[in-house]
Length: 342
Image 1 (cartoon, rainbow, N blue to C red):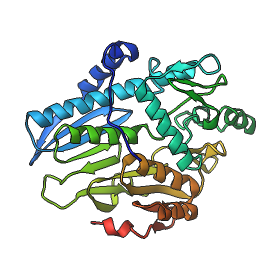
Image 2 (cartoon, rainbow, N blue to C red):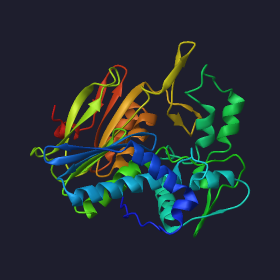
Image 3 (spheres, one colour):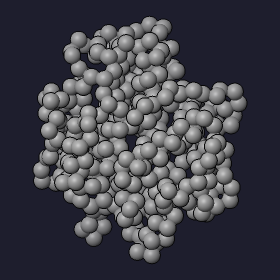
């Protein structure tokens, strides 16, 4: 999976997608802190806490960090479904009405969505928004959709129905909608890591909401970056630590976002093939892979597939390793223990 470097068309874009306002909001949350041999940068974007630990200090590192933060803010402004002026919101508003024009960057992103949909066996579906709206885990009190409501929402879901042609995309039925939550944050991690490397940073850890990619050597002199995996039974604590170099780690789980009604637990991860929250007994899946986009795709796919089929998926994917935590056991792929540091 090759990720191209971001090529921004700066002229007029800030006004077009409201990127200037998002940049200001992200900048207000920006914090820098010196660390031994490194610079730590934190900020709020993409609906989560973002953290970068950059090897070194000085103008080169500061300039690279600023470029990375601006890129993330611009990416959110363009592709968040929660922002009315974003490209995604414009595409959704035009569903069943007319195609929307795309630039080269957006075309590459949707081409990647197509590949990820195929590789995940349809588990990653960018058109799942009608189902995500239906299963609102934030609702108070929570509401369980009826079978008819689920069927109606499923009728609006299906990436293969999206009409794509050079420079254009069209959702053919009113009510359809795109949501890139299944890959957007991971894609951003990969692009920021690439931007930092191209800007002259010798090594860095990029962590956006526990989706992580590292490159180069850590500033503390250890041979690899140490990444903790959160324990779904005790959130806030780690059940394992991995030593990672020039790779990515992503975790999918429903232990932080769920609701319970009449003794039944409903997580926030919805299987677009059934229209219902996943209930396979899996609490979390962590995957190490060459890119964060691939790690996130595999962790979500394995979570949805369940422990047995999910483990087979991890075992059959070259260059990856992972662990599946259920309510009663931990299943690790053969290569997972090669990366365990603690």
